[in-house]
Image (cartoon, rainbow, N blue to C red; front, side, top):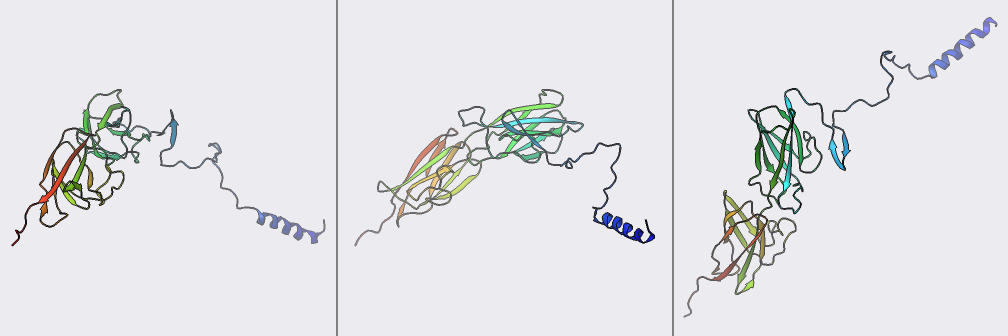
Length: 268
C-alpha cells in the first residue's frame, strides 16, 4: 500500500464511525438484560372470577386488611351492591379514613366492595357518608371486632335502605292545579321547598316531572313529615298543611292539599 492511500483509508473509517449511533451505556454484567418498562406506582388490575380487582400491595407491618360490602337493601337480590358510595373507616384509637368506592386506596374494584389496609387494633367501625341519591344513610353504620385471620377483618355487608317516597297532589275545586310550591319539613331538621315542574320535582329522583299538579320527593328517613303550601293558584284561596307519617323505607306515601276560598269580600 502506498503512503498516499493511508489518509483515504483513515477518512473512510472515520466516516463510518460518525454514521453510527452514540455508544450504549455499559450494562451491569451481573444483571440479566431486560427491555421491560419501568414499574409504575399505579396498582395493576386483573380479572378474577369475572370481576375486575386490583392487585393488592404488600401488607404493611402492623396493618390488616379490612373488607366491607355496601348492600342495596331494596334490591330483591340480597347480594346486590349499592352504587356511588363513600365510607368512613375508623380503627379504634386511630384517625378515621374516608374512601370512595373504587378510589385510590380501595383495593377491590367491584361496585360496592371495599378492601383497605388499616392499623391492627381491637375493633373497626364503618359509616356510609355518601351514596346514590336513592339511598337513605340512616342506619348505615356498623362495628366489628372479629378477625377471620390475623391479617384479615371481614366486616361483611352493610345494607342501605332505599328512601321513602312522597307524592303530593294539589287540587282546587276537585281538579289538579299546576305550578304550585310546597314546603316539606320532617325529622332531623329536614326542610325542602319543591315547585311543581321545578328541578326538585322528579319521578323519585330519576326523571324530571312535568308541571301537572303532582309533586314527587324522596325523603331521607322514616318519621313524621309536614307538607304546607307556599303559593296559591288564586287570590284569597289557601290550603291547610297536611301531616304524613312515613313508616317504611322504599314505600310510597301520598297526601293531597285542597285549596279552598279562605276569605271573601261580601257584595254590597
